Amino acid sequence: MTRRQAVLLFAAVWLGYLLIGVYLAVIVEFHFGDALSRVQSAQSVLFSRTPHLSAIGFVFSPLTTIVQLPLTALSVWWPALTTSGLSAVIMSSGFMAGSVVQISGISRDRGLGRGVTTLITLCYTINPMIVLYAANGMSEAPYLFFLAWAIRRLIRWVDTDDVHELIVAGIALALAYLTRYDGGAATLAAAAVVGTVTFRRSERERRWSRTALDMVLVAAPGALAFVVWAIAGWLITGDAFAQFTSEYGNAAIVAATGAATASGAAAMVFSFTELLILAPLLPVLLVTVIVIRTMRRRLLPLLPPLLLIGAVLAFQIIGYARGSTFGFLRFSLTVVVLSATIALLAVPARRSPPVRRPGPRAALPPVRPHPSTRRRYAVSAVIAVVVLAVGLPVTAVGMTSKRFAPQEYAIRSIVDPQPDSVDPRRLDEQRVIRSFSTERAIAQFLDRLDLPDGSVLCDTVFGFAVVVQSTRPRQFVIPSDADFTRVINEPAAHGVQYLLTVPPSGRGETDALNRRYPTVYNDGARIGVLALEAPNDGADLPDWRIYRTLPATTSATGSP
Image (cartoon, rainbow, N blue to C red):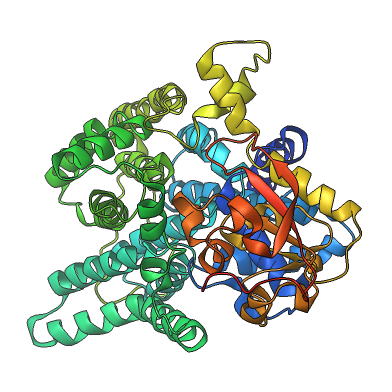
């Protein structure tokens, strides 16, 4: 495949993913909360009452929001980029198309035939989970892209010892960390891979120095990203690791929602079941490849995908067992990259990988004439394709399980809609599909009032979905605003006309209005009178009460 063909592959796949994403976001109006939340963060950076870069937030990694800033800037002319979350869809579809190009690139590097390259790439491209997370604006797409990019470069480095590959892999891993925090585990694993390979290959007198140098080259960009992001968070918020300690972080959300978590053996069984849903025959393929490569003494190229993805999966499993994260199927999505990569490595290479400058410890694979390897090549290719192809229906069925795919199972009602069904499960799925529709209606209601800036006070624990779906984001006072504390203490005195409140239970306990005025949802806390009540049509989302503030001369300060 030439570079031009790679560009055409990217464009075609991106267009396909983008069309699906636009359909979900605009026609079906189906959104994932994390995707909308990041769109709202980008919106706050540019269009809040007090625009500033730190409004990007420090609980989650910043890259997905940063990438959306140029698109969000265009929402002045195309509001759907924010109100329908299309900036997130464009971002995720582009990155996932990039991951397809990287998977195809591994095959191209090894000179595999067009047939096996097309089939393995196609199996990865149309994997139901890959398609969904290409289209829904979540952070999985850029994360998979950066991991696939890093793995591809490290596989090439193992063969060529080209320092350029190490540098590019390090940059990719740093960007992976800025996309998802478990990218740090991948960086540590990459350093271990590089250290192991360099140590084995170096002459004794310079072994330690060369090993240290190569490890620094691949780990330094990630270490720099870690330090800079932690310092930035500490300087601005006083908390270097808000993801783990903030009341808005995953651990706090798990605790507030009372989500059931497994521990020990139960967590392992649950996590491995999710892995089998995504890659059911991967264990068989792994054993086969390891045996074959052990016989050929070519195990080292397996280390990058096995250790990098293994470290990420271990991070997620441990986090789930400790109750600091959820057992979501998407947290195991990296195993799809692992499965595709191992499938490609199972097929004998037909040429040495491209290299800019071979290093002194290069170990290019022996490439025998094609006729002598035709049978082994054909058998390996068939096994690799079958392993990936069998996984597609298994994943599709597994995604309908509410237990193992709590964020994805409702997709069945989009693929196979039955609007007149009275089946309780179908009704539950339809409610999930309607998530954030109530928040959209509230945003439209407030927009019609034509309120001045700073007229609506709300926290973004749940309120992000109202703010982002509004065409007038400056009407809201939100926690990222510089004057939020002053306004929440005296709302009416600062021009606030409406309060958006949620029940003070579950995650609602962390809502700033509930913390400042504990009874505000129930009785207005003597600072507001009930103007509108909006029962939520979505699943696991709160019923809203909108209070109109009392005049400043008669309002009370509420409970401290």
